[in-house]
Image (tube, rainbow, N blue to C red; front, top):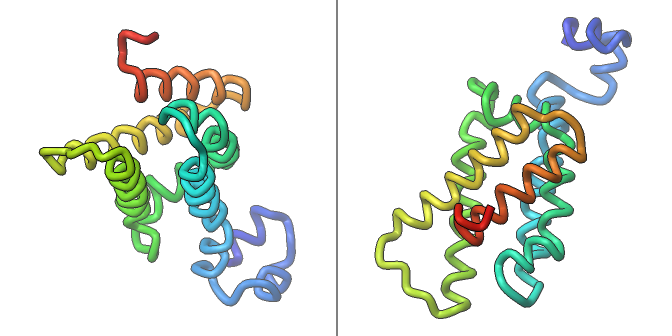
Length: 159
């Protein structure tokens, strides 16, 4: 906590006023990531239209908010070893798998190989992480996210 307070240029006692330990502080920092992911899915599932139309209508807004927290997202996904969040990437993938599964079931689509759902969720998660790792600015993130989602929903030939 001392290192954190020095980096933030605030007294260590002030940090302890709000957080008992580093784990509590880390939880508070990373919670918005989970919030925006779940909100994007929740909002998108209420929309009508194709998957891309639903994403553009609501999901994109919350994914961009998630990407605005790009440094926190990268720390959560790449550097959370030894914390209760060390499996965050797998949690993200599982959340997206469940979302994809609900959407294909809603349309009556039968996925013969369950691994396909895992691959799609994993690819989308990695795509978001690459945008976060190479983040330049909000406009750049929106442009790249738009290209990725177009390719993801319509195929590589669409770009």
